[in-house]
Image (cartoon, rainbow, N blue to C red):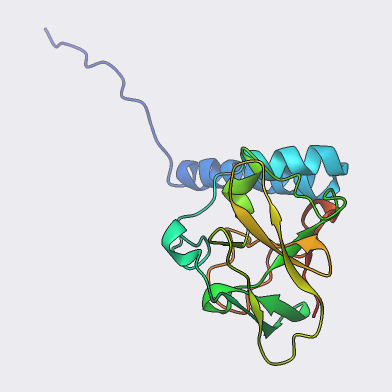
Length: 176
């Protein structure tokens, strides 16, 4: 008598590629939804997206210091203000009257450009607008330019990156 062996599942060489393609399509669909959403949906989509870890993109509390200087950087989106380490700075359309409306999950992707309490930022070469600060409700002091609070974008990984320009139709490079 011969024993029959149970049939083994057959895997085809194309199956992993199909799974990868399906995953890629889901990611692209999510990105497309975020860029075509209304500002409030876009903000929520950006807030829920985990930021990649990058020391250059997100200044630590120790980098928030007196003597922070605003400079001008060339980016793919044009000339932009830059903060610590030459990283591109952004403005947020939902801010009003010089006060930030980016808190909680928002700051994960859009860390504010802050200085120590009582400190001020200075203008580097090419920076001609009005530099000031505003008190945030979280107790930090955020730098403003022509009355608009300034932010970094956590997905920018190198000086001159401007990947946050136009996100959700409400985030823009800070133009000198």
